Image (cartoon, rainbow, N blue to C red; front, side, top):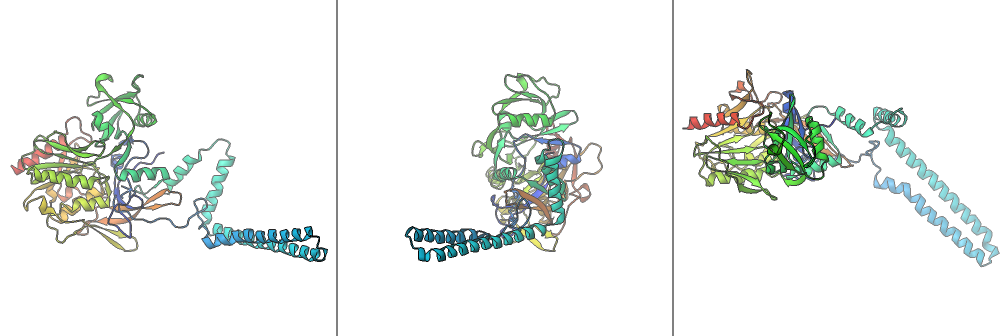
Length: 554
């Protein structure tokens, strides 16, 4: 069973939580839409090769935040015993090398004397050689005894349950009457060891991918699939990915798939994902907003797995739009204005606290200012979180009443009572907004972790009130909320290059509120908008929110 990514807030190194370092392990504030959708009895499949999200941060994982480097020290990957120190290793080897050389030297001297016919000294020389051999043997015995004692000491210092587990697994692999896939067994064991749904183990290959993705370097096609009853739909399309470039959109139904010259196949989300990941050349997805459409040339989208620079921020106003496109993900005018916006309001969609999102966000704010927009609608729907460092950077532009150069954005509380503060990287709200500027936030049940932290900072510093927060409400539902993840993960590197992302602390808003297992809800005063879980060609939630916000401003 492949592990799914779930909400996570990732933080950076304990010694330096100020910047995202993909080489180090880190702490995480991140969530995946997968986990939130699981609460809604939905299932997601990633269509990129390898594990999907996020990152080191966060990649912390490498993609949530500042990275907290907490490498596991001196651990033997096979036994868990401490590795021998350099001095121990030397002591074990030197008797064999040094004494053996002495033996060879002694025997060589004897041979030379014999060749010279010196009978008078022959017997004494032989005795010296014998003594040297005996000395070497004794040294080897002592070294072997020391090595054995060290090995036994390290082995039996391990928890006896681990020794028993090792014995059991060896018997399973060697004696079971059928072949046992030990890789699958270990994967299940790693999953079973996780203490909560936010902790996870990454293989060296998985973690290397996460580190790359934390910097925006992705591989695949850039879509996530959702199994919706008997249908498969596109849950998300990564900005600037092959899927986005081909024209695929969130909410489309997948009608079929196959090779360009082959038959049209149908299958589950897992089957489609497996097919795409196995392709070495072009393949075709048939997709439409109409679930009854035919899988033919009119609904065909040609794709190929490739490397791409993911983007996470989109800007729109009443006249035009901007997004990050091309090989370098450069800011590009895309001319897709958002109907219903007034001339004073800009719309920014932030998909994840990942990659180069902080720089993208700042660039879009600069566009907003240059185009004379003074109000902002910030869309965090489906944003499951990411790196703390990105949260700190983005928050620095949005804290209305914050004092000082680096206001507090959030803080972590650890089991031992230790508190760690996370500060904004600056405080330049007035550079983009007037004192009476209106900022509104859109969110849903998949807005989690770093997204919820940002909402908390905006509320605590007076940027928004709860009435400026618009949440999705399911048809007929009485209550609604964001995801409710108020914990942080740190990532620890294993000697083999794997990584253990472990929940280590609770996260609090600047004024001390923790929303874990609760979220931000209608009971706080957030506004509910009734809309489907996954929109179709028209985004009814966005249309209603824009009408409510811009209509109120008018």
